[in-house]
Length: 424
Ligand code: SF4
Image (cartoon, rainbow, N blue to C red):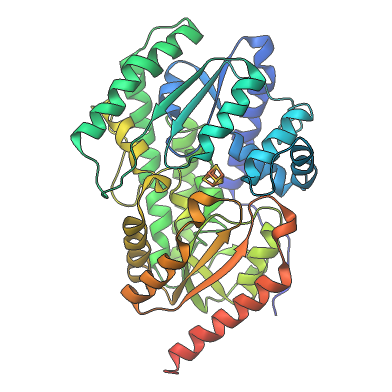
């Protein structure tokens, strides 16, 4: 059994840490500098549009997951439950509420500024609406909602695109003009979009490196670090371009050297190639990852790394059609896809990445991901002939991470793959 070691940090990781720290410094200083900020969500975020108005994004989901990783979420959730939020509510929401009621101290220990705007891009999860209803009552600031039509039939039609563009023109942009006192500058938006597309190219190259055997990356546990800048505050910036360029070059070096990913169990020998559906657990993130690593299981593709944009299907932000491309981006996020599309995506990953099987991490409090996952399991098994596994954890509520249960299920699952291999 491999022994846990302190994970070495690549240049790109250090760079990412610094980018995030600087972003939180700017947010903490916003009340003095006059920088405006908008609270918004990861799926369907309009970061380039915000950046074109010099508005800083704050992502409550990211703050919640960071609180989970830092061991603060139990206390925050308990505060929210005492205030009457039910046990079944998404734990990101409760964590965010508890954080707000405890002084709104963000992940770096600095106070987050109150929002100048709540920008709600509604992409597939009803909880987003309720969450911002609550924040709207707490902060008494303007709220603008972009209603993103669900891909019920598995496709984006012209009328769906027009509907989103019209809301951007008539509601979102006028609200940003009102909050910032600046006029909409389409050239500036296009510049940001061109920068996004460059970074997106490099991100896709990194994710697709996992098609090689052995994979140089872990596309779930490692993948959550790789998507950090592009899913949060940095799309459309030079920093994002530099970060993804350097990350790609590091991954290509690992690939050339035939190396596997660096994990909490050190560099491991790849024994199982797995596709994973569902968000990770954050409260026991390293322990969870280590359970995979000790078995030699490398995640070669995951759906969670597509919640803030599905780029490996060819989508890129297009600077020549600024508002249309933003509309298509919002509608294409994973949370906005119907079940057959999700099943198709998982089955394709299993085939394209030559996986031994796929595993669903079902999140107790995330209805958006969890609804229908057992059907998904059967459907992907039927389409691929590969074994599916099912485990249950939670996002940031440590009460729902049972290490022994997860470990038992994982061990049985890997045994099942072995049996399949030997024709059993
Ligand atoms: S229910 Fe799931 S998708 Fe919705 S806000 Fe919570 S974690 Fe996000």
